[in-house]
Each structure stands twice: as C-alpha cells, then as structure tokens.
Image (cartoon, rainbow, N blue to C red; front, top):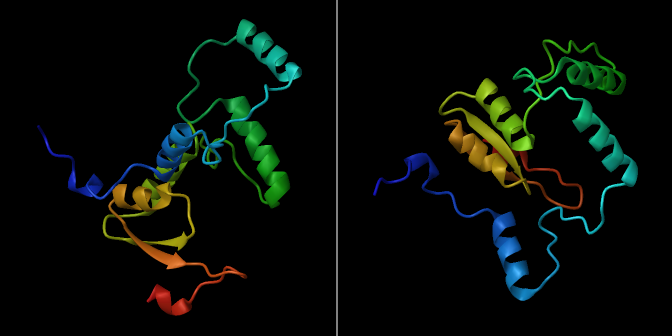
Length: 153
C-alpha cells in the first residue's frame, strides 16, 4: 500500500468530526456543527422552487456568475467604502475551505512562515502546511485576546 504524503502525515481526524462521533455515541447534543433543528422559512423554499424551474441549468463560469459577483461587489463597496471591481476583485468559491486554500496559495510560497493566532479554526494550520508554508502558532490571551510580541520572533 502506498504511503500518504509527508505533508499530511501529521494530520489527524478533524476536531469537528471527532466531537460529532462522541455526540452520536453518547446521545449528546452536537454543538460542533451547524445542524439546525428547524426548517428554512417557507418563502425561501418557494423561491428556490421557482428559481430551479426557470434555470439556467448550467455551470457558471469558474470565478462565479456575473450577477452574483456584481451583487457581492456592490454590497462590499457599501460596507468597506472602497471601489470593488466584480470582474477583478471578486472570486466565488465553493465554501470557506476552498476560499482559504485559494487565498493561501495566492500569497504564500513554500517555507514562508504564516502566523496562526490561537484559538483558531482547525483548517488554518493544515492550509498553511498544504501550501508548503510553516504555521507559527501564537496564543491570544484573554480577556483582551492580545498576543505577546516576543512570540513573533
């Protein structure tokens, strides 16, 4: 059997998956994932049915449908107060994991150091490793959640 890559040998099962297994085994309430115990609003379901019927039924361009990118750019321009070009500054991804990997791949090179403030979302360290960067974990200390500047040395 082939060995897994050296870059992934230190990875373990995700904390979210581990907590879900424990919750399922013990009958506990699973707070590690977003499992709503209610249905979406009826208006949303009706709207989704209508949109599904009318189409289009094709993939969008790989960086996101133009009308969606324009809407995102307009919203972010209002929020951030800076001009945002939907054709140059907006990329739509299939979730935050893909977005984080795309961003990390765009701005890091192998052996770059990436600061990961702790506590953190568990994918941040793995994303750095997968891009070839070296994660440097720096603790944020309550109650102000500041960090010790000496830890950045």
